[in-house]
Image 1: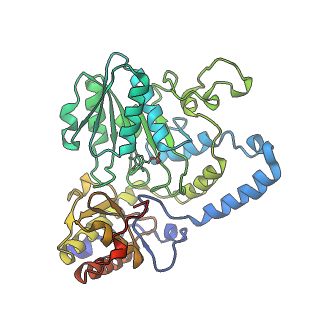
Image 2: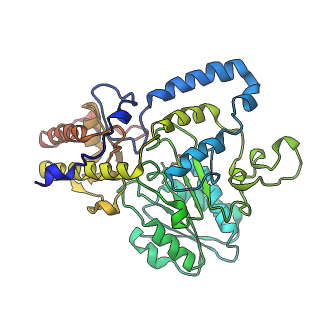
Image 3: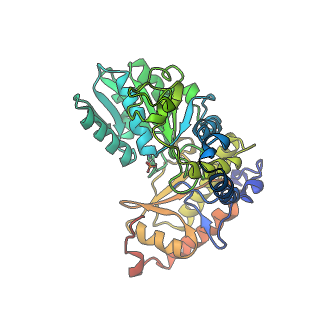
Length: 406
Ligand SMILES: *Cc1c(COP(=O)(O)O)cnc(C)c1O
């Protein structure tokens, strides 16, 4: 019956699963928020610290390739997001890279004043947009509509369409190609946030014609807490985009120490200051896990895992309401359920080794990364969730106290 055929038997991820150091007794369904530690990363960082930093000291900037690391690692991210080599660089955090991308895009449409986004966007993107608008002081407007209303709201007043492809709360997936084409037809530019897409599903930035994009590397790419972000600039803008945060390492000749700023060639102008070499070393090792992995296989397996999870939870936990789109084609690699006691339920699950997370006001969120999660994990997680729900194991005061990070 359906059950047997839903799972994808075609791809075996046991080799990638073996590369993760998950604690015993834990089912990790929160890799959409912080990917787990790939075994090679701890070793790589230790070696980098001892041999490169320790022994080469400042010579490492040249001898160990530290200065070139942002572009070299950008070229490893590029195929995961459908970008050509030389169009992605690394550094800073996603909030900062979104600020730069939006600033550069607004500059390319100086006669227009509207930034269009949606209310499913992650707040930092909206905060950064507001901050930029205030700093510019040129009368821009941040127009926020419902995700379903975005397409219709694209008109010739819009300078930049700024969207997150996968909604962090519900997993709802925007159609990047279609919305980008619509933006372009209206004379606007499109800036995409790939936080919950990179490593979760196939992305085709070049094919979709995206103008700018940025993403973090600590979610599905497993680069570690605070891992450096990436930014993509379409080749047609690479040599005209103004980076806004015009730091010395985006300068054409940083070590000429000119008093005047001259942006560097291509995407490198989006670099700001000294790159985070230790974080880049961890990320570099984490990207080794992707060697030989096809995103189409990830997507197929992720859909199978999410479908199985939804079917089991709906059959066994009737008090939980699906908050994610039911159609897998409209969903990223995460599934959310609503419940008024979502926070306490989440804490009860974590206490029993099933790690998901909670997003206010009432969403229990579970991420499914086929690199290290399989069908057995899904079924074991549902057994725990069913017990938590049917026996009201969440109903204890200590599960209601909100921690600083939820
Ligand atoms: C996780 C996330 C961020 C986080 O930004 P940081 O600067 O890395 O803290 C930004 N945008 C979206 C859509 C996210 O999901």
